[in-house]
Image (tube, rainbow, N blue to C red; front, side):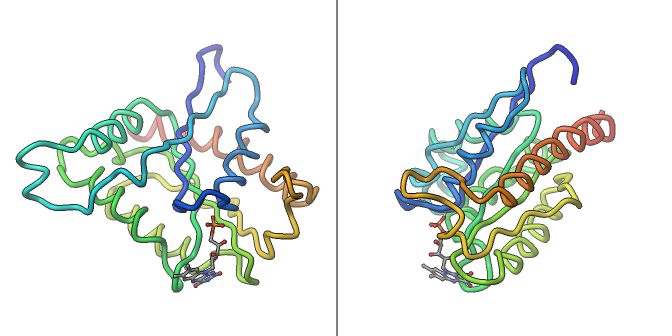
Length: 191
Ligand SMILES: Cc1cc2nc3c(=O)[nH]c(=O)nc-3n(C[C@H](O)[C@H](O)[C@H](O)COP(=O)(O)O)c2cc1C
């Protein structure tokens, strides 16, 4: 890493208060190397359903703030639940807003890491594949490997939502370090 600070924007696809995916993002924020910091976008719920008329008349403030954060960050880290084998509508909606205007799409060329957690057995594999397809359209540079699929998530965190499963913790740490390396390559590709 250079001496410059490195900024990761965290985006959680779940709106619920006790989201495991939010817990996963928070666990990631505790595993960052020096000079790397993470901010988690907190206004997903405030973003209205995409409507071209709304965008043309006046871009909603939460959308403006999302786009600004996306423009500034060195990497985007998405933690997504799986809803009916896909990503939650709120996450898809935010991505649609961010990439709606082609020439000011902050997702274009952006390094992105995707991870997900579920109480079920398949670790959000299907949601993550859908998300990769969507981010292909926004021309984002999604990290290929490693992938992070957290299954049976209720057994990975304690009641205070500390990530107590050592294997998952190690995977998450490796995932973050890989994302930092990937972001450097992505920056070269997009320059
Ligand atoms: C509408 C709906 C559909 C769901 N579909 C899936 C699914 O396809 N696969 C899966 O693993 N879990 C599914 N779940 C369970 C979620 O993985 C679970 O609620 C999870 O805790 C949500 O993530 P969160 O804890 O970050 O909110 C679904 C939940 C809801 C509400």
